[in-house]
Image (tube, rainbow, N blue to C red):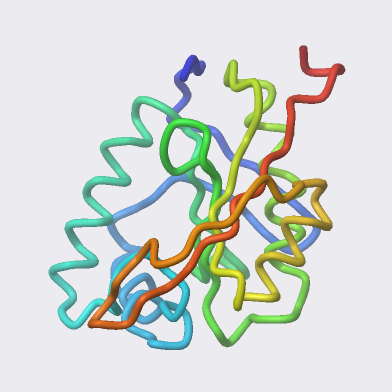
Length: 176
């Protein structure tokens, strides 16, 4: 990934501030990452201990210094989720269950995707979602992602297998 470094990268929408991770996000992050509802379709089990979330936050802070591509989603100054480019050209998002079905993640991703096109050289963005996660799959399709394929038994969390639907969004000509 080719990016321009910027510790001060900040994206704003009508309701949200999308920013880099900060140490004071820990308690609010733990509230989301320990919630089985929010973690139902995530690739890890809910965090049973705040130290697991602290390790994740430390990794995000370190990664942000090199590539401001994975954002803390904040509403009224409080962390409520995460969204952005997680690995290579993969995008994803997670939102506190208290804010589901409010259009927040659509608003966040509508700001993040053009940012990613501006600062990376990705030919396409891709996403991996559980096909049972209708809200996430629907959002990705609304953002212009198209299904490329599916796979069974891609994640096993606490003995329960999940499946995957893979979606891709090609780089628009305007960002060529």
